[in-house]
Length: 191
Ligand code: GTP
Ligand code: MG
Image (tube, rainbow, N blue to C red):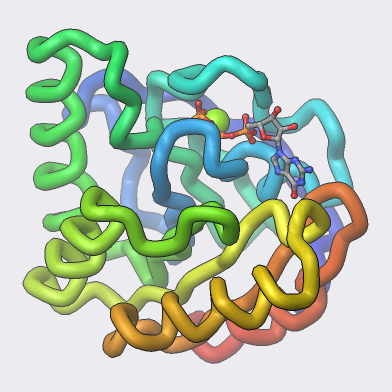
């Protein structure tokens, strides 16, 4: 697919405020700080579309973006950030189960893994969750520009060995745009 326009639609803090299921949804999930919002900006070519931060936990709401007037990209809060309270972790768990687990409009979940630390325990839990709910998902290994060739090979192998159900594994750099066309081509298969 080619992205011709992208617009922020709304932020949702409560599942009862989700928009109608008018378009297919591609969800971006992963640990805090893995690069979800940066990936969205890189894919759409719009630097300030999703707010990014070097401090983990920046995205606290479900953020809807409308692409090409016929598809939603959904940026959800990251998991695995140690400094959040129990109450926040509970809220995240409810959101995950209620949105990612139940929403019929979700066509694909893009699970982002930091290529320097692929498949940590919380990531493997997420893969189990997605498999349990029969969600089609693919993996993006982020921050590829930070790796040596040896680390790159290791990251890919380590991911392949635990992500059995993933429909694709793409190495990505939001800095250079590496992986962008490959990832957009994969999206077409799920829409
Ligand atoms: P939360 O909203 O907190 O869950 O984080 P997030 O997953 O949305 O991460 P975000 O896109 O805000 O990026 C976190 C940090 O990683 C920022 O400092 C980004 O500039 C940096 N970053 C993201 N992607 C890349 C990348 O491909 N390469 C490099 N070098 N840095 C990146
Ligand atoms: Mg974010």
